[in-house]
Figure 1 (cartoon, rainbow, N blue to C red):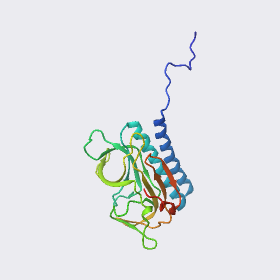
Figure 2 (figure 1 turned 180 degrees about the vertical axis):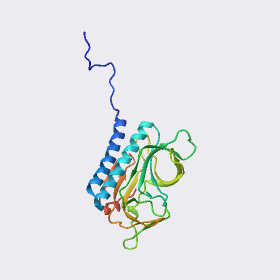
Figure 3 (figure 1 turned 45 degrees about the vertical axis):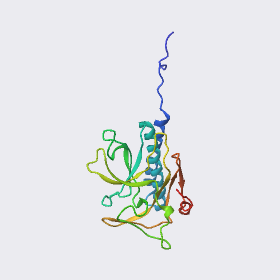
Figure 4 (figure 1 turned 180 degrees about the horizontal axis):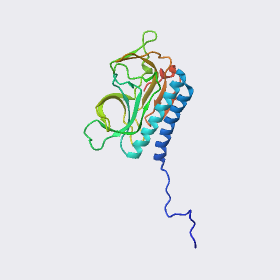
Length: 225
């Protein structure tokens, strides 16, 4: 019997893990394109940044499963860098140097829209000022998914200081926390002010790695993790 030209002995298909990685990348790119189309609109920029962070988190979860290792999101934390608190990379440990903080970047660098910054945990970085409302920047409106670290990314020449997310396991789990973005501006070559605690957006990440969008600043005040 003549075999159909469309038949084969083995079927090749995308795995769920690969699809998660692709979906995360597509989400990040789609958000970036949306920002470009909307123009210089602060609210649109915030929403776009929220989408970019969500896409990076999805990509990190997918890479953790794909590589069967931990994965992290790192954020540029050198105030001298022009993309300070705006540059995001998805990384996995560099297997060739397991004893050091060396990371292997997966995919491309993601840069938040101009004038939008990731809010670091209060007091972790020099060069960051928080303009306050009623004498304080509400603690619920800081990113708690991150810690500060110094390490090297394969392909970059120098060690960098970063905010690094808690480990995302191959199962997609993570010790949960918040990721918050807000408007800000450069006030000097080595200083940034985050000036609007009422205009923040972001994500709350559960211990299962599931991210929920938070679109109202006051909602962050009710979240404890």
